[in-house]
Length: 157
Image 1 (cartoon, helix red, strand yellow):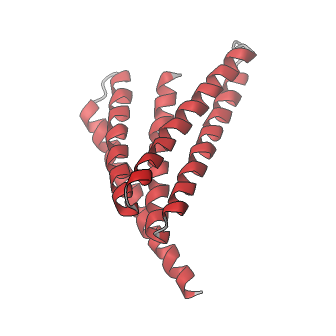
Image 2: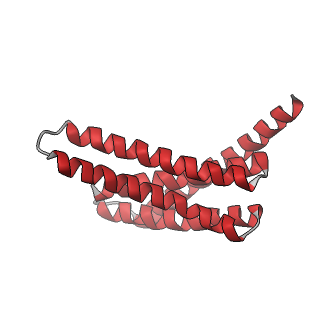
């Protein structure tokens, strides 16, 4: 359960950063970026919690109360980890907040991926951390250009 939750948190960070960077580059509007973060936090939280619920319900050894408890924990942790990215936008400009959030997100992602690697036998921790961070940077870069492309296309309309 813990390993799966941490894996979900890592994916939530990547999704949040990608949405944040894509919306920031495409709209240059802080309200749009904040709205995107909040929406993604709840969608990711509900989605993972529902998946956890369905997964546990198929196993008849789990009691209903325990299934709901685990799903609630998944929702709360995933939502909280994504919602933390709102904080820089309350104190910094859009560009500064986006940059800070990306650096912070990559730092947290590296810690989570290191923890995931330590849980697995014969897994090199530093290599796993680098793979996660490089994958996140590639995804973030792609969404930056997608945001610019969408802004350009809509400017033609």
